[in-house]
Image 1 (tube, rainbow over the protein chains, first blue to last red):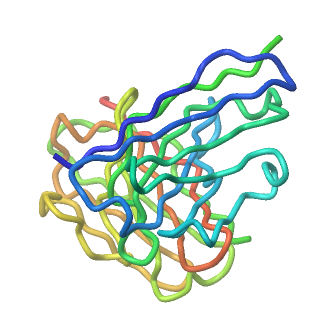
Image 2: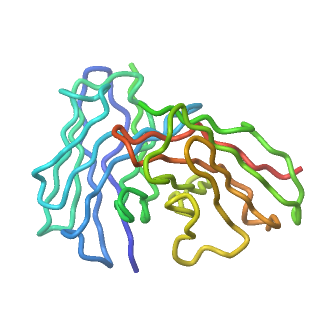
Length: 118
Length: 108
């Protein structure tokens, strides 16, 4: 079964850090761009970061540049999001997704909740 | 950045009804690079349509997409009980990728 499973979310104080993980199964992980998308309470979806197959190309939304780092380990079929200097406005459910069809996201995980609060 | 505006915010409908959801872009979407997703609380979002009008694998024929340029539509020909959810449009033709704010389809 093609599947993505996220982990690593939780409650953290402003200024803190978290590392999210996304484990892929059922497909050749190393062949795909991957992305992190977040859905904040009362807001729409936002693409946070994406990365190409070998990690040589990365893109970030402006609001997380310099604070978040996307990475991957193709040997472990895993995608990561290191989140530093977290802000209240980063509170959201974070989903990883597979990029297909030149940009449409065809496989998603259920998401992991990140709450930034004092 | 391309801003996507979905309308309406909420639709209250009964099973069996026809649904038309709108997604309007602030500027032309390149190469009809527009997708639609269905999202239910606590679940993984599901790709319905890509390339504005191509159904993704396994998506029932009651879902259809149309449009080009700045105006796009998702139609559900006959609502099934499992179709009550939030629907998002997404443009991936220009960087940064952007999403609409979502339309909630709820049971009347």
